[in-house]
Length: 81
Image (cartoon, rainbow, N blue to C red; front, side, top):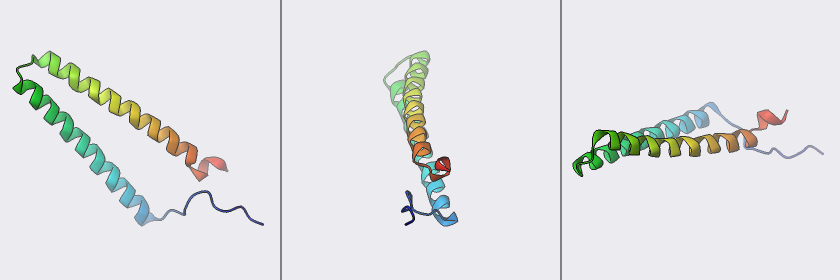
């Protein structure tokens, strides 16, 4: 008896939708970082403090993205060949 597939089959359409979703998510995060910088400036914070805060938030986003990609690779059927 054949093993059941571990992941649903992918299609070019599904991959394009996933890529579009990922791009939209990155765009939203970028917009949020820009808004954070604007809000911090509006509070009168020095530009070096604004930079430090935005970089800190970006680095946390980067760590979360790396963890997600690692989990996605672990789930990838291509890695199980």
